[in-house]
Length: 382
Image (cartoon, rainbow, N blue to C red; front, top):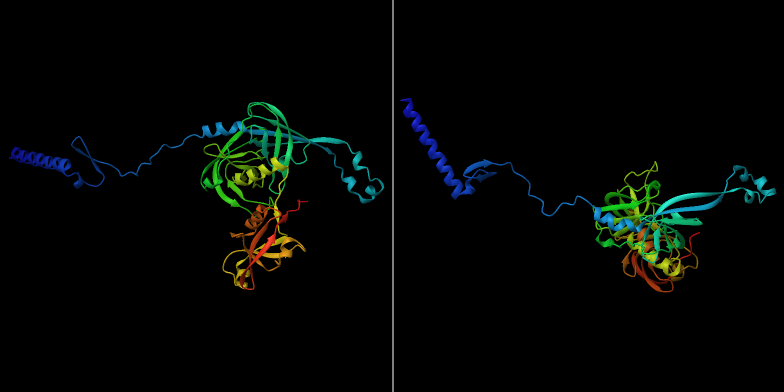
């Protein structure tokens, strides 16, 4: 009896397995979700995410190899008189006016970084790196030490151009800022603490950073790639090794990197570079106005729906004053290009060519008014 029952059970199992095999072969869509066929046996698999196509980048060695030869270490020195607090005494200065000139001199040294932008020997760096220096030496990645001189500086953008002489100088490749986006991988290359060429990795944290109170003209790239003292003037490059910015400053309470660094964008750096090489100075447009951010309350009071910049005051007999622009006017655009805030307004005015005329649209008495302004040359910063 037991043997008979066992035979019946074995036959039933055989029929069930045969039926399942047929279903798996002819109608795989009827299998349980997540199942697969393997040699006629049903194998249950755990669901997995769709695989990412394309090769995953695990190294940026090619980008570093391409850009590093063009990044130089800058060593500067200048002669300074020793400072003595006694010299601040007004009475002493009155009777001994030349006492400060008699104080012994000493040399102060500092370090920074720069980027070779031309095989002819032009080097782009920060103004504050070489400010006041009477001796500038460059150390290249291949160990060569070259003397350099200042070709021109622009304190308002914190940029400077040096000129050196040498053979087979490696030049950086310029990138395009329009292709740079927040989240892109970037490399910062410089000379932190005098250690020599150092590469750090990060991403673009933000674009168009302004109102930092660092430079007169601000349009910074923010990055979390480590930038430390000595890295100023170095290169910020993209994942292909192309220059997209000049490392300028960091936000730090301790003096070390906190992951908030700022670089001058390549578009601004290149415009300043070309003028400094050509003329030795930067020429900018000037309208003679003092702008003020337009708050929501002020815009509501003026019945202005669009953005703009409020004019707080105008320079007497300046270009704007002569054109009839007055305090409480709101500049909406210049030559059709909107001016959203003070930074964009100052940058737009700076781009204007002295001696030309520009059409300025202002909001006045609840209506738009077009004014022709003769652009003057921006006075040099004191």
